[in-house]
Amino acid sequence: MNLARALGSVGGLTLASRVLGLVRDSLFARFVGASFASDAFLIAFRLPNMFRALFAEGAFSAAFIPMFNKKVAEKGGGLAAGLSFAEDALSVLLPVLIVMTVLLEIFAWPVTWALTGGFGKATPDQADYVVMLSRFTLPYLLLISLVSLLGGILNSLQKFWVNAAAPILLNLTLIAALLFFHDPDPLLTARNQAIAVSLSGALQLIWLWLACLRNGVSLRPKLPVWSPEVRTLIALIGPAALGAGAVQFNLLISSALAYSLLGEGAVSYIYFADRLNQLPLGLIGIALGTVLLPTISRQLGGGHEAEAMDTQNRGMELALFFTLPATVALIVCGVPIVAALFQHGKFTPGDTNFTAQALAAFSLGLPAYILIKVLTPGYYARADTKTPVRYATISIAVNLLLNLAFILPLKHMGPPLATALASLVNLGLLYRTLAKRGHFVPDAQLKRRVWRLAGAALLMGVVMYFLNDRFTPYTLGTSVTRWTAMMVLVGIGGLVYVAACFVLRAYLPSDLRAVLRRRSATPTKKAP
Image 1 (cartoon, rainbow, N blue to C red):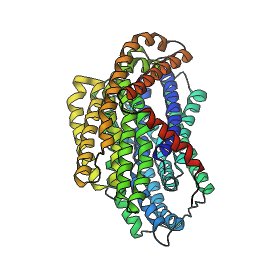
Image 2 (image 1 turned 60 degrees about the horizontal axis):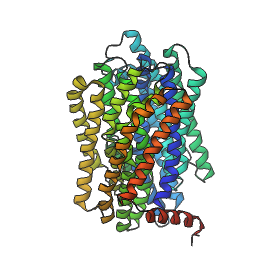
Image 3 (image 1 turned 60 degrees about the vertical axis):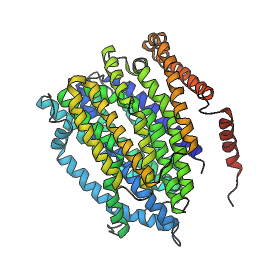
Image 4 (image 1 turned 135 degrees about the horizontal axis):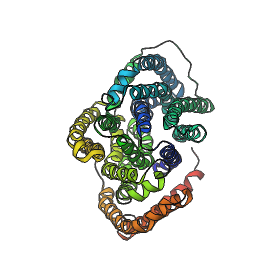
């Protein structure tokens, strides 16, 4: 499988989803602003959204895909054996999820109390409102977990695009709710958004179920089966959740501390900044993680260690190629980007400045967030979920300590900076152990390109810094003007970066021509 082509398929659909996500957030900022209503919805959405990141993009896939592939690859197994394992997993997963969802609905008050760090400075009526929104969003946990099971099967069958397209339905549903069910009262608009979250989960589940049927995958419901494989799966999911979800847990801690210790709007500043930070993370990190895990597990299962090593080197290379310029751009051009996307309606210039500050702090850790997605498949493909969880636990502890140290002096910049530094710690530990075991050794090509890519990104940053003042006035005009100005600014930065890559010989025109030749030749090749 061509890694760049698979990444392009997943990344393209993820790009569509993230662009729609920016449209959604822009509308949300317009109709709700950075206020108590927005803080309440974001707290209510935090737990379901964390489950989406952990299960759909992390723990379940990390544990399930290698086991499913192993079943399919076993002699005398095939797809039927893999589907039998999936049915056994569903028989245990579904009742557990139903019971968990019911319990969370019943105990929504103490759960929300924990998520907000004790409801902070909220009045009793405000606390009740946050709990109500949480009850509306909690069914999404059940639905998105089932989506992750079906998506894991399709990813194992190399139908990456279907699962990558599912989040588009989340954004379309929330956008529709904002356009057709917004209200002059932000509290009612936020309530409608909470209802739309769970509705989107149902739509995603229908989408994946229909896609499975089209690909000959049909799972029959049955009584729980505690087979040895299912017990192994359950044992792997817990550690994988912590290992893959360190960033999500760190954001959860950050939101709780910001809600309880900082003023109104702080949670919203951190959220909007994180949404922009998540754009390159989704396009690059999640797409690479989605493609690398089944690829590496299949290569290792066939005894092709050298191929697996090369795949991970090229994954690291692609990650740095896209991540370094994104990091510099978000730090240097934070104000015009935030203004273009969010500064209208109830979102003020002061909100823009505070969000841009939080974005700069988050972006310092962007390379770490994405490289973690590249390195963890090296563990999961070898059925090692315990090592990442140890390092994730250390990362969470570091994040908590840094949050407590930074949050009062740095206010809304403290939690993002703590999250960034904690992710760097996690990355360092993951890299060191893989290298020590001989499971990842940077090859000559990667070593040659790293510093040249960094130099190209810095040159781009200098150019964009001097362009900021020229473009900022246009980011405050009409919607068409502001979006056009932002895209032109980003486009100029991209062109400067590509030119700098060629000048510094990080990439050569011959490299690009070779990739294009492989992509054009691939469809004409017939399977033997």
